[in-house]
Image (tube, rainbow, N blue to C red; front, side, top):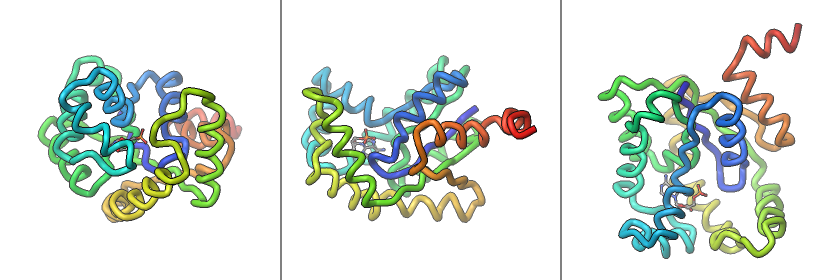
Length: 199
Ligand code: AMP
């Protein structure tokens, strides 16, 4: 099964993608994690991406599309399916993704938006920064967060109508507890389990 999780920074995509990976075995593909790994390894991509990420901007489409398209075609991902977490983030990325998936005959089973209240997002990210103690992400501070949310609003949110028009967008209340959000996602991904649970 192949899934795209959409939603602004701090909406819980990463946490939920991890949980779905543990539950269903699809592979979480987080472009943020991949880019952070490239920064840590000091690769050419990492060197290009670091300053852009630290200030909360988007890394150029061609870099991100390149890494995700390569990864999607690897045998473990082909076999187990994937959960895209943090990609696509621009309409151009979404279009490119569709093009590549069409060419490879790969289908996306679910595109799910975690909907959130923006004010609550700030509180959530501030908590995340505190809870992680010394290990705070360079882009998890109030100023960069504001920037990342603005970038989301301007560059990423326009993807939602693109999927909505195609009748492909499903929504989940991302403000519910972590457990509840997982439950809502499981109800979408595994409707038989939902029917059994409600019976
Ligand atoms: P994330 O961990 O998903 O919040 O991503 C952290 C940072 O990595 C973002 O603020 C961007 O700078 C960069 N990034 C991650 N995914 C993408 C993407 N699909 N397109 C462009 N930049 C990205």
